[in-house]
Amino acid sequence: MSIRFGVSPIAWINDDMPELGAGTRLEDVLAEARDIGFEGIELGGRFPRDPVELTVLLARFRLALVGGWYSASLLTRSVDEELAAMQTHLALLKALGCGVFIHAETSNAIHGRRTCPLSRTPRLGPVDWAQFGAKLTQVADYVVAAGLRFAYHHHLGTVVESGPDLEQFLRATGPSVGLTVDTGHAALGGVDAVSLIRAHPQRVAHVHCKDVRGKVFQRLTQEGGSFLTGVLAGMFTVPGDGDLDFAAVMQALSQIGYSGWIVVEAEQDPAIAGPGDYGKLGLATLRREAAAAGLRTAQS
Image (cartoon, rainbow, N blue to C red; front, side, top):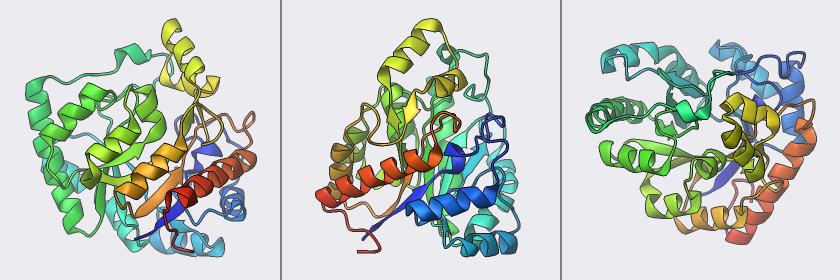
């Protein structure tokens, strides 16, 4: 039972806002991630999708592929249609030896719409939750049978955003539906990530660690801003640079015997928040708190 530290390329190149990091070479991202000390990196939009090409590329920088976000449309597709749509992504993850499938419902999401306020985040009714949960469980069963952990990503601007959303989600889905516990999205969605981890240990399949600047988010909501406006304003940052207590997060993960990846993910403007310096701070913070909590790394 051990943990490994990875990073998201979103700190360097933002897929939702291509202008952020537009001139950054993928090879430079991989080299800097390696030099900071990360063992793996999640899939980004600029990554090659050919399994052989991607394997060779990551091997050059001694990085593993942690996994990669999959945008689902189960609210508008049948289960069979969704399974057909995800085959290429699933095959790539399996070919690269990934152990986790990160899934999020985005058919009606607003987080990628620059002019849409977060107050317009979509909500599901009781009947919708029952149908969505049943379909999601079937997809998760398929992914688990394929040998990967299914890790649903709760996210601002999507149907699984708030505490009540997560309660409905957990009631509506079966045990195969794990979670990507994202500390930043949890905090800004009104969810206590530590309590979530302790209350549902069997659901914790993957972990994203980002810190938050609560005052920035408060101002954003007061002004009716969008998710992307909040990113540009700096509502997210790396562990150790914001409001959250990562000692408590690591202690909770240790208490449930978590084994898997812990990923530093903090979307910011790389021209303002240099990914190298911020990546070092985030990794150092998590390493320190993980060691204090008794979490064993794969290298220890």
